[in-house]
Amino acid sequence: MSQPTVLPRHGLSRRSFMAGTVSAAAAAPLLASAAQAEAPTASQSKLRQPVVTSLRINKQVYELSLDTRTSLLDALRDHAGLTGTKKGCDHGQCGACTVLVDGKRVLSCLSFAVMNEGKDITTIEGLASSDGKLHPMQQAFIDHDAFQCGYCTPGQILSAIGCVNEGHAGSEYDIREYMSGNICRCAAYPNIVAAVLQARDETKGA
Ligand code: FES
Ligand code: FES
Image (cartoon, rainbow, N blue to C red; front, side, top):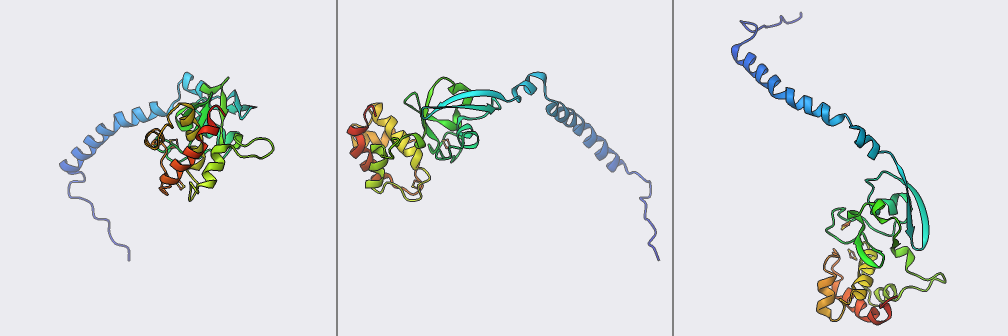
């Protein structure tokens, strides 16, 4: 036998009426602002249109169709297929994404791809010479066993080259200080410093 439905004695109590009224009133502006937030403006829609972006990476030109908000890191990895550059934090805190732009160290997660048109971008894939000979800094990292998992290593090597060419590799202290933006969770720091010291003279201007 089905149970009879039990209704409140007065149908709607004062307490439940007030609660319903207050919550509806509170929700109204939120719903309105959510609707506004969802409706893209004309300029937002335009921003989302892909634009052809020309990037010179490792001396090769790539014509990439990119949302203008694409980071250089994502352009390299997801559009140019150069996955040697690593994404660690994606917030400018770990250094894993370091590349060279016109010879200077850049955190590619903090740079929009479109800002780098007309510049020379160097990633880890562009360091070895065409006959396969490693860059002196790459060789030094191998000689000194300056990595364990290797995740931070492309960023460490690019950063080390930048560090030397900035003139900030004069001493172990300087190397530690000016490489401090590149975090190594495996703590290979003593070996990294030894590698930079070894490759320092060969790297200048290379
Ligand atoms: S991924 Fe760019 S600094 Fe961490
Ligand atoms: S070698 Fe593993 S994070 Fe540096």
